[in-house]
Length: 257
Ligand code: HPA
Image (cartoon, rainbow, N blue to C red; front, side):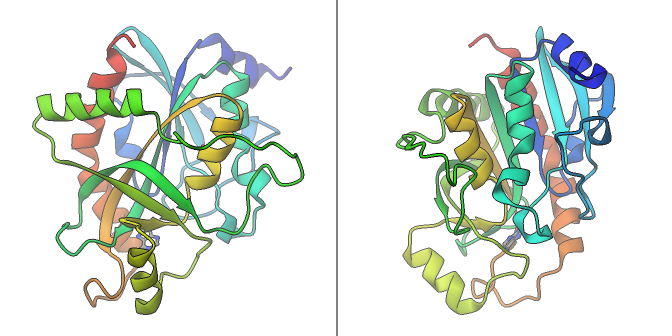
């Protein structure tokens, strides 16, 4: 086994947090160590602006947590298996529960950019799965842990943080949606739309991990409000919205559960 893998395993984290576009500000200030993804043969390298490609080891209370800054996406040309290598590696080093974060467009006209949504469920509209060819008929009736969601909800209330809950539609990308696609997604019951997370959740559930996920609603999806969407704006809004979720994560993860 590689030395980098040993260092990650020695941190004895049972929880990991995967950070999406522009959300690196979610890592607590005091970190014990950093490891670049390039030290791990099993991991593809992120190429998209705003995705750093490293692990940071930090504590929430007495709990050791691995923060994974950066992920790769299907739209970069990676396969569903590549996209989920990070989740398999985290499981391999002992992680049992994972918080996935992402930037997403809101499909609800009443939600302003910068708000946070905890995922209650998802629609996998990518057309693929990391389990392709494996004949693993895993149960996804509770993709996002009911128990853990209740903890986050209660903590958000205590912190007086406004936290929406809803269904995330995961699409292939990289283009943003047309107005007709946005209308379709709302008809299908989605509250937010993005280009990540769903395959990671499927892989995590297949490995028996508990999953929670949060979308930073960085913009209104097309047709909700008519404004041109730019990746740079998604990153800026994500960075400025980070602090309430950072507080929610540290407080909830620091608790015993
Ligand atoms: N659509 C898809 N993905 C996104 C969006 C969006 O509006 N915003 C951030 N990621």
